[in-house]
Length: 270
Image (cartoon, rainbow, N blue to C red; front, top):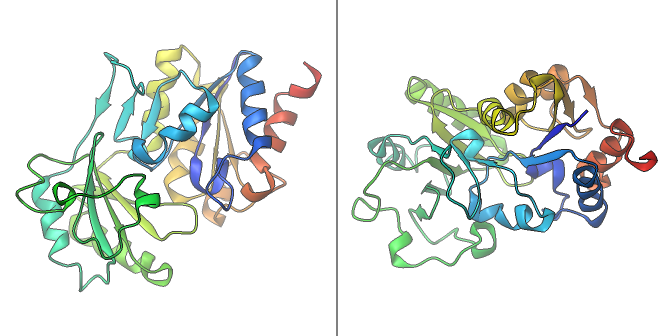
């Protein structure tokens, strides 16, 4: 039976160096060779994840910004969906940068990003160089962005998230990135990976029961709960492990996804 394999990136498909290892790449390509679909479902924007789409040679729709953008990379697609947040909210949160102990505040859409200061700008992290047009100002950000990204310290991430939800919970959802960097992703209320996966599955004509998804962090919860078979990484949070159908025997840094997928789909015997 043809499966849709929905893969989170950070903490799941990517190793500690934020790369897809040769072993994981080989397993995913083997799955596709046997007729299964692979779709990336991530909190990252496309400019910070498109290289993995290309590395795997994918042709399926992709889910970015935790579901706020569902698109067909580098192609026009009639079913493309992008859901934004209110522009005014961005500047309201920016005004609280110091009080919330934020390193930076960034607003993003499919094509570009805006960051309030270059003090913490890392061209490798943003997968782009910054110019004055990327500064987060009322002059530069003239439309509603698809997503916001803020960075704080690991020990303050939970309290910052709680504060943002308390203030803006009627309008947005706040999600935590997996991986080593304490990033909070802010998207429109009701946006979640599960809805993006549902749209991808409908387009590919794959039943919900034939979707398998891998994840490790809070932003994967609804996705793992929604799909027919949700798999938490060994390195996943306890919450994610509690909603998953199964847990990998190895971590993301040990090619846990590849190890599990090869056994689950019996790829070595096909």
